[in-house]
Amino acid sequence: MIARALRSLPPLETALVLVAFAVLVVVGTARQRASQPVALDSHSSYDAATTGYRAFYELLTREGVAVERFEQRPAFLADAGVATLVEIRPLPFETAPPQTAADAAALIGWVRGGGRLLYVGGGRTGKATGSDSLNLPAVTGQRRRPVPPTIDASLRDFGVTQIISNSDVRWQQRKAAPFRVLVDDGRGPLVIRYPLGRGEVTALIDQSLLTNAGIARGDRARLAYALALRGDRNGVVAFDEVPHGHLTVEHWWSIVPRPFAIALGLALVAFVIALAGAAVRLGPPIVPRPPDQRSTADFIDGLSALFERGHAAHKVLGDAARSATRTVARGLGLGDETSNEEIATRIDREDLRAAFREMVAIAANPSPGEQALVRGVALAARLRKEYAAHGRPRH
Image 1: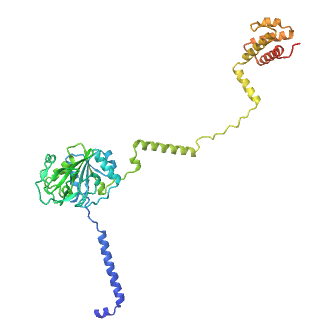
Image 2 (image 1 turned 90 degrees about the vertical axis):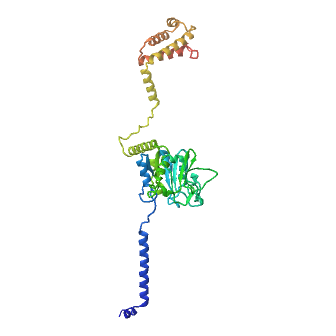
Image 3 (image 1 turned 45 degrees about the horizontal axis):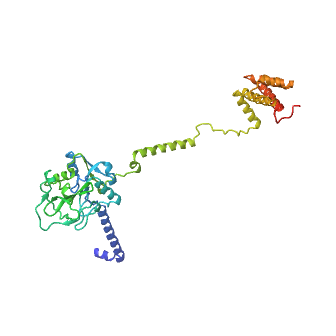
């Protein structure tokens, strides 16, 4: 019955349904695999897995070393007060994003300025490492014929006597810029140190030696402590977490100098106050004054008032009387030193004599009034007109 039922199904439609079902199964399986998290080796000091470096970080903390995690761009290394920077790059390939030119220049500048760099990692066999700016040597394979292992005296002081590595890569010796070999297990240099400017670089090619799973074996913990400490317990040892995805975002207001930020804030407050003052009226409006167009009479009145406040009437009368007296004396043929009484005696006309004596009396008054001022100036003008050489004849 089942075979008969199957033969009764339309073949084309049945084939299409089976193909669609197979496609759905394949797509569903692929999406399920893609949704599963992929465990990557972070090589971070936060990572407590076998390939992490949290044990290295906690080892330094337990030993009383000033240790921290650096999560900024290399440009901030100088301000952070870091003495030793631990840069961990996994081997044989680097999963960290490539450094920018500015980051590489800042890192090399910090090292050349006196910083110490502990570089853990390397590059592929037979090729130069990815950090060319650090002047790291190339990577090569193990020696075919092992030689006796060597441990530098600076490490033996910390109790490091033997380091065994299962890595098949070593640092390649170079003639142009030789380096100091700190650890050689007999198959090639594992740990080297060389100066760079005023600073130095210590490079460990086998990153598995200091992972959580490997740091407890043999003398590796002593090696980690000696490489990070470098004889200076007062310096800060920082683990660079930027290559492992930990980066603190810096905003422009946190980067600029503090005095500049304060000045900018004050300027902004002043601008807001000025804007509010321009938009909101805080007092009555200012009414413009009407145009002041005065006539000549007003000017004369003002000048007269000024003279009156300064008591200039006495001086004006004195000047007018002296000028008229000098003119009359010269008109009579007398000198300027002639007294007023003698001048009055020599005047032959009675009206002019009386005018002269009245003028002298008015000028002698220390506080003449307006009428006296007008009368005295008029008498002086009359006498000057009568006795001036350019005046009209008196007869």
